[in-house]
Image (cartoon, rainbow, N blue to C red; front, side, top):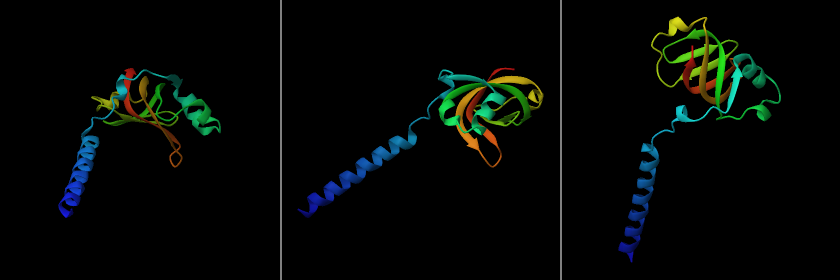
Length: 129
C-alpha cells in the first residue's frame, strides 16, 4: 500500500514537471504576423489614453499602426512625439538617422505609463520611414 502511494506521488510530480517544462519552453507568440487592428496618429493614440474613455476606444493587446515623428531613438527603442514608447522587435541598424523623421510603426499596445505619460508598445517594427 505504501509503495502504491509513493508511485502515485512520483507519477503526479512527473506529470507536473512535464507540464511546467512544456509551458516554459513553448515559443513566444509572433505578434509581427498579426494583422493591424487600428491605424492612428501618435497624437490621437496619446490623447485617447489621456481621456477617460480610452478603454472604450482601444484594447490592451491590440495590434496598432502608429504614424508620428521620432523624438529619440536607440538600438532597441523609439520614442514618438508626443509620447509613444516603442520597444522594437528587432534592433535598429541606424537609429540616429530616424530622429526628426516621420515614420509609421506596427506594434502591440501594452498600456499607459502614468509616471512618464507615455503609451507603450512592444514587438514594434517599422512599416514606413
